[in-house]
Image 1 (cartoon, rainbow, N blue to C red):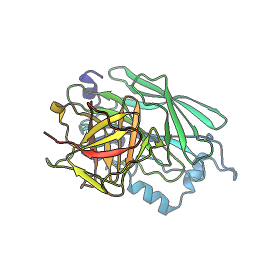
Image 2 (image 1 turned 180 degrees about the vertical axis):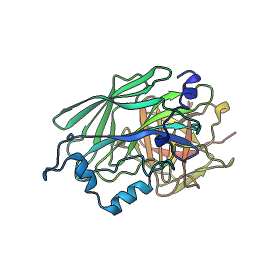
Image 3 (image 1 turned 60 degrees about the horizontal axis):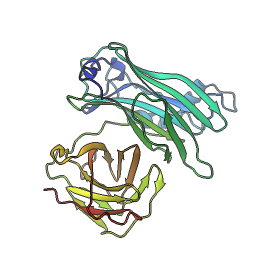
Image 4 (image 1 turned 90 degrees about the horizontal axis):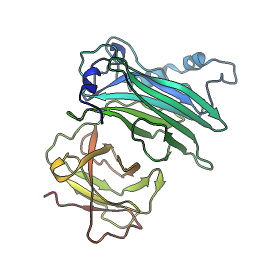
Length: 324
């Protein structure tokens, strides 16, 4: 946890990095590292000319998905084609004021490549209060699959266990938390090969007091590994839903904070997918339909349950928890 003054000094972000989204602001540009390096393509084009080779339709499509400041036409470079797997970094701060000045700087202190693997040494520094968060992340192709393996080390912040990610999936790495307000600064780390859309916002709490989670035909992955599913109703819908995860135990999930009941913020829901973390593990639940009635990205809160008679943990199951 960081002291309360951390987000006061994060009121300092350059104009070109501001977005119009009320729930958070992107700091700086999206930064990209390729698995196979920045070499020119076979035609001899440089990185710059590869960027310029995007069709107008591709460029417009990407820019439409990027929140920008009214002072600039775009704050993120388009993505080159035909360059293989890459890792993108987006730094966001929640609920940031429009009163800003330059303060936060992000980047890499070094990149090391070997056969089929790249290691990136990353920093997020605040120049006003002289804080400097650092971590090392390695990504490589997972042999025999279309997935990528991502692992963290040498970090000044808590980080997850090694993950197996599919094309376009993201890991949220919390860099700082204001203990007084709960506001966070987060690196969103995305991997893939195709045209990956940037985030439009950070997660927010659901407004409706009676918001329910709707879990329809769920599929669970733990740190990227698919888990066998047990039998349950086609759709489970309730204010608090429980999930029994093989080898991990039972978790209660809610859209509402419910701090008095022991719930803590653990992840987010967007459309038909939920991602939450506990003790270094990342759990991803994909459903056949929307989990929330709204179309935004919402915080998810969780509580680790202590059952007197632990259920059979061989399969993933879903149930309902009495909210009282």
